[in-house]
Each structure stands twice: as structure tokens, then as C-alpha cells.
Amino acid sequence: MNQVAQGRDADRRLDWVDTAKGICIILVVMMHSTLGIGEAMGGEGFMHAVVAFAKPFRIPDFFLLSGLFLGRVIDRDWRLFADRRIVHFVYFYLLWLAIQSVAKYGEVTHGAGPGAFLAHIAEALVEPYSTLWFIYMLAVFSVVTKLLRRVPGPLLLGGAALLQIVPVPTHSYLVEEFCARYVYFVGGYLFAERIFALAASVRAAPAPALAGLGVWAAVNGWLAFTPSPVAGYPTLASLPVVSLLIGSAGALAIVATASLLVRAGGPVTRALRSCGERSIVIYLAFFLPMAATRLLILKTGAIADVGLAALVVTAVAVLLPLAFERMVRGTRLDFLFRRPAAFHIAGAPGLRGRALGTA
Figure 1 (tube, helix red, strand yellow):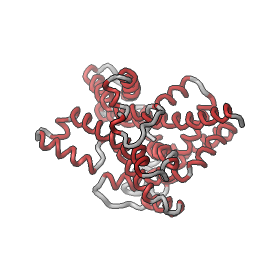
Figure 2: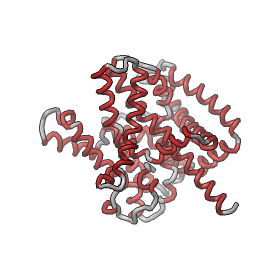
Figure 3: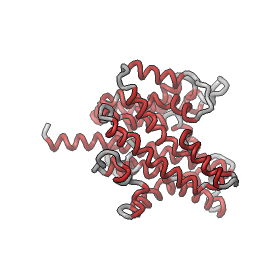
Figure 4: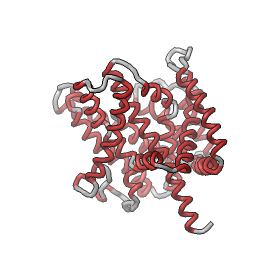
């Protein structure tokens, strides 16, 4: 294979990852927007069905994708590793923790003043706060995996799976999310090459892939919408073991879907890829336009249909952060989405995607 062909293949490898991230971040924003507007308007719409369908795999796939490239840096010295996989996420977590907390000052202090605000910040250093929990957990997962990198892969994966399957009584949100999500991150790390091979095989044989996705969608839908007979587990998809299997299957289904979209090309794929390339921008900033749009709809009564209102809120919450990031790029506000050189403990990366990406 010549160098041009190798370059194109490498681009396709990254394109499907960004496309998959784009799908995931939109599903995450959709969930927050839809549930919020549904609660505010006192009803449900068609978007609630989409959110329910995506629930088994929405977060598992995001963590699986985030673990894909860990192998490239896990054996590096701690300084470089920490810069790429810890400091990067800590910087954005702390920055946007401050921004979100100031924006929600009355809510986080309950009217108790600066002392309560400082107590809230201190708690958020130990327990991940609000929508920022995902990047908090990425730093934690990276550290834990680095420390356990000498543990045999099957043992590491088996232990992570056991944590996901067996309920662990805890009042800690950090521990709860670690137990529930770590297995997918580890899976992405351990099976990275196989996942890339799956993406390549899907592009090479789209017809069988489409048939497989059809079967998966039917099974996922049945499990996601069927009530569970077991107390404490609302649907069949939430049952122990079942949730792990269907979450893993859904994560791989998004990999396959993204690969097929990249193969087909077109404006939808380009839009999803653009969202994926800037997924951290959307993730960090969507809460403000989401809340503002929801409030505007409620105050004006401009949209009566819950499903349509949820769709509008989702679209605004995705698009406005992208537009804002574009507007502030290269200005003094660039630090909101790009880690300044002063906050690197190793050489600053040259790629824009590494500066903006979540993985």
C-alpha cells in the first residue's frame, strides 16, 4: 500500500471515530434536553422514545470510544501520560465547574451565601458535578488503567465486568459510575485493534452489516421498552448481565453505523463528524443554551408539542456551542475550549482534534 493510500486509510479510521462521537454527543444532549423539557411541560413526546431506545448504549459507546486510543500513551512516562489523559480533563472540569456553578449560584448555595458556594466546589472535587461527570470519570479511568496496566487483560476486563454486574451499595456517585461504566472504557482499550478491524470489515461488506444492525435494533428496542418483572430494574435492558451485553452490543452497533455513514459520505456524515471532532465543546457548553431555550419555550408558549419542543432544544443546545467556539477561536476566550500552553506539563499537541477532542 503506498503512502497516499495509507494516509487515506488513516483518515477513514479517524473519520468513523469522530462520526461515532458525533452520534453519541447528540444522543447525550438529546437526553438532557428531552427529559428536561418533558418534565417542565408535564408530558412526553416522540423524542422520549428515541431517548429510551438509546439509553442502553448511549454512555457505554462514549466510554468505549474514549478508551480506543489509550494504548498509544499508557506505557509513556507519567508526565506525558498525565498531560494527555489527566491534566487535559482536569483543566476543563475545573474551568467549567466554576462557570456552571456561578451560573447556578442560587441553586448550588440554596441562598446560603459564599460559604455554601465554597462547600459546593469542595464537594465537586470529590464527587463529579452535574453534566461534567463524564470528563471527571475519564481522568479517573485513565489513572486506574495506567496503574493496572500490568494486570492480564482477561482479568482486568473480568473484574470490570463483575463490578458492572454485581450491585455495589454506595452513596458515592463517583463509585457508582465507576462500577457501572469502567468495563466499557477498558473494553475500548483492550480491544482497540479488533474494534478498528470491525469498522474496516463493515465498510468492506455493508450489506451483512446492515442486516446485523437491523437485528440489533429490534432486540435493543424490545429490551429497552419491555418492563422488567424485577423490582428496581425498570426495563429488561436494565437487568444485570443483560445491561452489560446490550450496552456492549449497542456500542459496537454505533461503531458499525458510523463506519457505514463514512462509507456513504454526504452532508449528514460531515455534520456528525464535525460534532464528533468538537464533542468536548458541545459537552462543556450545551447546558446554557439548553436551559435558555427551554425557558424561552415555556415563557412564550411558542411550541405546544413536547416532542417538537425537545427537538428544538436539542438542536439549539448542539449548534450554539459550536457557533460560540468558532466565534471565540483565536481570541482571549479561546481558553474556554482549548487548554492554554501554561496548563500543559508536557509538549502541547499540534493537532486541533487533540486540543478539542474528548479522547
